[in-house]
Image (cartoon, rainbow, N blue to C red; front, side, top):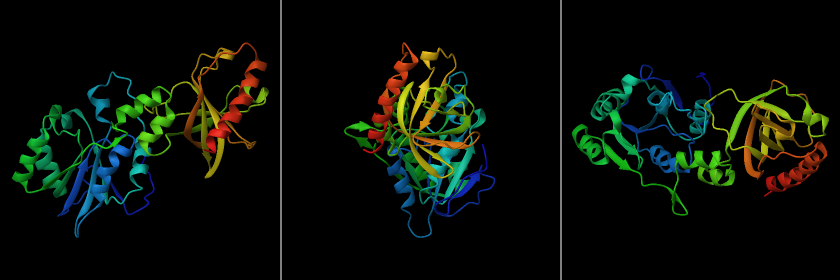
Length: 316
């Protein structure tokens, strides 16, 4: 995890509790916040609506708890940790505490977490709890138990009702499922912004250039970053703070019988040398599934159609 990241406001980032100095009136929320999506916004809004002398504290975890508790699962996340911190940095949060999640911490009881960490180390005065949040070992503490702790340790508790869009509760799980099924527009609606990934442009085999559609081959460094379903997408691409339209293919290039998954972007009206540069790809819509064509000419014909459709999608 790199010691990165800008702050739109005056966010102070603490890597662990050792660098955090206890405050008297902390408004606190805690969670993984994968996606920093629409379902999180009411929690963040409540966190940032502080009274005089109060400071907001958001506690999140690294590594993600599921990586520690279920190490054999191939877990993919909406954001890399750096992306998540960048998204949180856009809000008027005073303190972001990045707490190491390990097996010892996972065994801490709910009362130990609230008493020893939130109250004694942070200075909890108000706790903001999402609808599905439970504290402690094996998620043992229900909302009723947390209310008992609030009376015992003298803090206010604010329960945030589930955020819904068209009757559907927004969650990271639903967003991840939508992305894996290629439902980009639906995922973006739940997120409240366009899903994006970042990577480095690397050399490919040059096949795209040979057929008149040069592509930037993108390497995603973080193995836990979720990649949308195979197919062709309309995308915006950002390189050195410049934004371009384009179309992107995720898959195995079946026409050329490739065996390794690739992510390749054709950038409209672009000819610069951008190898080894960082690129951000924002997904707008899926155009079609990946398909094997009978000839290169048939593929080129389809790519011209894809370009027209991608440009149309990027202007709506």
